[in-house]
Structure formats: C-alpha cells, structure tokens
Length: 103
Image (cartoon, rainbow, N blue to C red; front, side):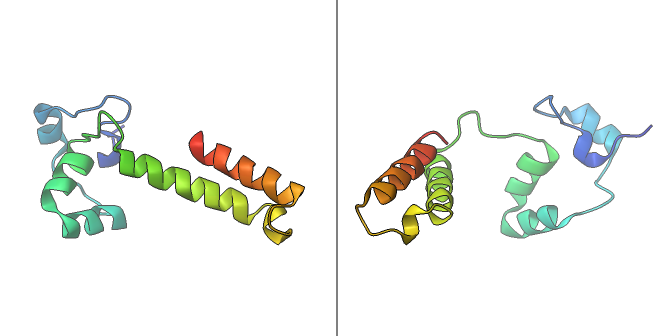
C-alpha cells in the first residue's frame, strides 16, 4: 500500500530528503496547503512538506488558546446571565479563568 503525502511524517518528526524524493510532489493539494503556500512558500515547505514544527510552542499561541478556551467557557456558563458579582457569576468567572490558565 502506498502512503499518502500527508502520512509521510506522521509521528516521526522531520521527513528525510530521500523519503521526500521517493514520494515525489504531492498529488492532491488541500485548502490548507493552498492557503499556506499563498501566505509563505517557505512556511509551506517547512511545515507541510518537511513536517518541521515548533520545538516550543510560542507564547502568543498559548495566550490565544487560553483566551478562546476561557471565553468559550464563560459564554456557555450560567454566570453570563447573572447579576455581575453574584455568587454564580463569581463561580463561573473563576472557572472560566482556570480553564484558560490550564490550557
């Protein structure tokens, strides 16, 4: 069975040059590949072709993920409909912050 292009680096990190040569160019370009290529050809090559990722997640990604998790938790809680600073409001606001901090 021949592997798909997206399967090349799964679970193994960096894809070797010889593996890339054997696989050839991607046969199917999905929307992620197209938009990444339009944004930056180097980003396309290193992230989608060579499968290189960050060793350490940049802080701005962590902050953004925490913010969105916290906001999602808050918007789906009962506290948003309560009077500000009521017990339910305080509890749900605290829980939302903890969810954001633990992301």
